[in-house]
Image (cartoon, rainbow, N blue to C red; front, side):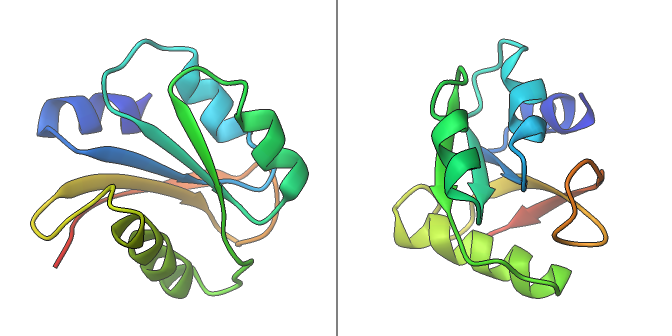
Length: 113
């Protein structure tokens, strides 16, 4: 809920949910919001499942154990795909430790350099 509220009120262009199981994206999809949600996962099964969620665009990305490296790659992936451009603001969520399902405990608001 914090990610949805923050992204809406700050005018973010996207919400990036780094998720192993896809449950973070599922919880976000249950609420009607006009900010697109990108479910970033290293699991093909989770990507396929997230394709069924409302307002969620699933994407595959490599598995990382370092949080900062994962956040940088997530931003780069969306810039490469034309979703984000320089100056855009976005919200990103993930859990620590990385790679374990069920632990989303971080929200960060970033601006593309």
